[in-house]
Image (cartoon, rainbow, N blue to C red; front, side):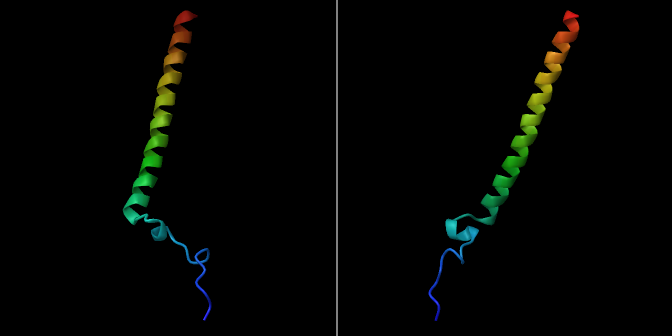
Length: 55
Protein backbone atom coordinates (compact mmCIF):
# COMPACT_ATOMS: atom_id res chain seq x y z
CA UNK A 1 0.00 0.00 0.00
CA UNK A 2 1.26 3.49 -0.87
CA UNK A 3 1.90 5.86 2.03
CA UNK A 4 -0.47 8.81 2.42
CA UNK A 5 1.03 11.95 0.91
CA UNK A 6 -0.68 15.07 2.33
CA UNK A 7 0.71 17.24 -0.48
CA UNK A 8 -1.34 15.25 -3.00
CA UNK A 9 -4.48 14.87 -0.87
CA UNK A 10 -4.93 18.36 0.51
CA UNK A 11 -8.24 20.19 0.22
CA UNK A 12 -9.84 23.32 1.65
CA UNK A 13 -11.57 21.39 4.44
CA UNK A 14 -8.20 20.15 5.70
CA UNK A 15 -7.41 23.73 6.72
CA UNK A 16 -10.71 24.10 8.57
CA UNK A 17 -12.32 26.23 5.85
CA UNK A 18 -15.99 25.53 5.33
CA UNK A 19 -18.06 26.30 2.25
CA UNK A 20 -19.71 29.13 4.17
CA UNK A 21 -16.40 30.79 5.06
CA UNK A 22 -15.17 30.46 1.47
CA UNK A 23 -18.39 32.05 0.19
CA UNK A 24 -18.14 34.86 2.74
CA UNK A 25 -14.57 35.62 1.69
CA UNK A 26 -15.59 35.73 -1.98
CA UNK A 27 -18.48 38.07 -1.17
CA UNK A 28 -16.22 40.26 0.96
CA UNK A 29 -13.72 40.58 -1.90
CA UNK A 30 -16.49 41.49 -4.35
CA UNK A 31 -18.05 44.02 -1.95
CA UNK A 32 -14.65 45.47 -1.10
CA UNK A 33 -13.75 46.01 -4.74
CA UNK A 34 -17.15 47.63 -5.38
CA UNK A 35 -16.68 49.88 -2.35
CA UNK A 36 -13.21 50.90 -3.53
CA UNK A 37 -14.57 51.73 -6.99
CA UNK A 38 -17.44 53.76 -5.55
CA UNK A 39 -15.10 55.72 -3.27
CA UNK A 40 -12.74 56.35 -6.18
CA UNK A 41 -15.61 57.65 -8.34
CA UNK A 42 -16.78 59.99 -5.56
CA UNK A 43 -13.30 61.43 -5.07
CA UNK A 44 -12.75 61.76 -8.83
CA UNK A 45 -16.07 63.58 -9.27
CA UNK A 46 -15.29 65.86 -6.33
CA UNK A 47 -11.88 66.76 -7.77
CA UNK A 48 -13.39 67.26 -11.24
CA UNK A 49 -16.03 69.57 -9.76
CA UNK A 50 -13.39 71.59 -7.90
CA UNK A 51 -11.33 72.03 -11.09
CA UNK A 52 -14.31 73.18 -13.16
CA UNK A 53 -15.28 75.78 -10.52
CA UNK A 54 -11.78 77.29 -10.59
CA UNK A 55 -11.74 77.77 -14.36
